[in-house]
Amino acid sequence: LRLNPTDETGHGHLMRMLAYTGQRTAALAQFETCRQILQEEFGVEPDATLQELYREIRDGEFATPTVKGADASTPQHNLPAPVTPLIGRQAAVAAVQALLRRAEVRLVTLTGPGGVGKSRLGEAVAWAVLDDFADGVFFIELAPVRDPSLVPSAIAQALAVRDQDSRPLQQHLQEYLRDKQILLLIDNFEQVIDAAPRLLELLRACPQVKVLVTSREILRLRGEHEFVVPILAPADAVELFVQRAQAVMPAFRLKPDVVTTVAAICQQLDYLPLAIELAAAQSKLFSPLAMLDRLQDRLAFLIGRTRDLPDRQRTLRTALDWSYDLLTEEEKRLFRRVAVFLGGRSLTAVETVCNPADDGRITPLAIDVLDGLTSLLDQSLVYQATSAAGEPRFMMLVTIHEYASAQLAG
Image (cartoon, rainbow, N blue to C red; front, side, top):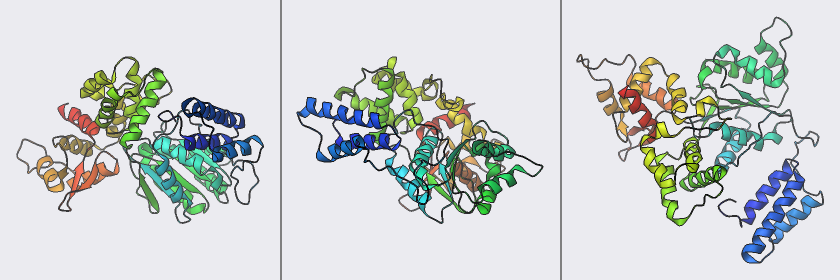
């Protein structure tokens, strides 16, 4: 709606969302906003569909979703409410929602590099499927947790499950959840990856429980369904930049003379939402053209000053530090060495350059190169493409390549 305020479909979606969440007055006010815009721009009234939606909300006839076999109240949840619009993720939300609605799917892991928007997508999906789970949807934040043995405690805290006797807390959780139809949204699992088997135990003991995980690394569990969170489409990336720029500088407009520059900024940032948000927040200080020039050193330039950002997302560098620190020492060495390549590289090339025969100049790796690349792939630090000949090629986002090069330079 920021880019096209006259989009009646968009106004209708927003009215429905507000009505679904009990904000009837705000939904009616949104209709009046749409009516005023259409009158000023075209001298017309909203179309019949939007007017009918307005009438249903006004007269209390608008049907909000209910859970089959449950009362009309909203299921329990502790989900954080969004404070900014979700841009460019409608297809991803629908795809993950469809996955979770398949009876045989019990565990879905949203993966991708730091800053791609896994947490935000997970929250949006959780809101979308709230009415599918009669006993609720619960959010468990694992970013502060470093000890895998504390994961059951974090889940128990979110569910208000008490450890009342000497039995293991995992057992209390399984007893509590055994007959519950619940979705657990577990955020930032990568640094406690050794706790993954506990999730499998929970799923085996509790047949109606489903788990949606966000992690920079797949869990490698049987029954796991990985959903790789994509970077934003170019148009969505530009929309995100404009929205965040206007938040700090309301006068910012996407004029014809800056469209190409903003698009180039988004491309330089690999269409990563976090990087785009950090850049757009600098709009008070820099014009898009000046900003594009400073992106030659993006890791130093992209610093966030928003107080509510987690520490790991205050700068693009710290977001990547978070992933790098989770690697083993040998994986770090391979990651640094892969930085010598520009563009894609074949497995043979990586083996030849990154782990040559011991000639006294480069210390051989203590891991198999294919195993190491697979680990980097699983941890979202490289991605795989296919050459014209059908051979796999290992690629890095430009932002991650710059970080790896800095690590290689020491």
